[in-house]
Image 1 (cartoon, rainbow, N blue to C red):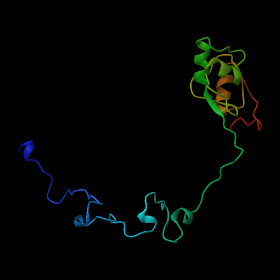
Image 2 (cartoon, rainbow, N blue to C red):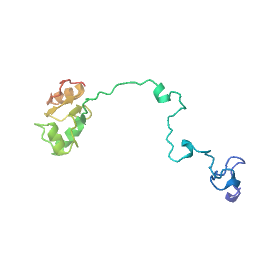
Image 3 (tube, helix red, strand yellow):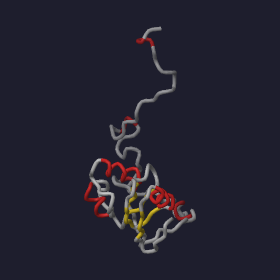
Image 4 (cartoon, rainbow, N blue to C red):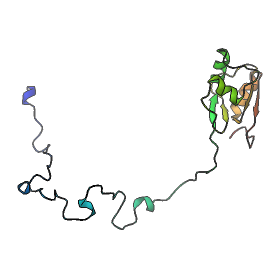
Length: 158
């Protein structure tokens, strides 16, 4: 067998239909679109239209609820804070949301900062944030530090 002898199986490929190329081609003049009407024009927008039947996106049940005034918190892990303290970017005695942004640990604080427990907790750190997980608070207190949660609900595990 040689490369020049290879060919696709009979009937497996088909030439592209070239429309609008004269009446002899069978798809000349109206190019298979019929006469007049919306579908004969360019720019047809009939997506989701099911011929008067109730469309599927309206038949399916809607689930869930998005709270319009939900708070979006930026999260930060303990390991990231510990690394910034080791590099000298942060002062462990007073870590606030603004100091995290100023030091480059976070890009922005959005509606607040939530502390998560991944990584090693910094030693003797005082951290003030909007929210914190229970595991993060326990880890910081075990390392001799303190976490102050200033969130509206002041809930440790949000």
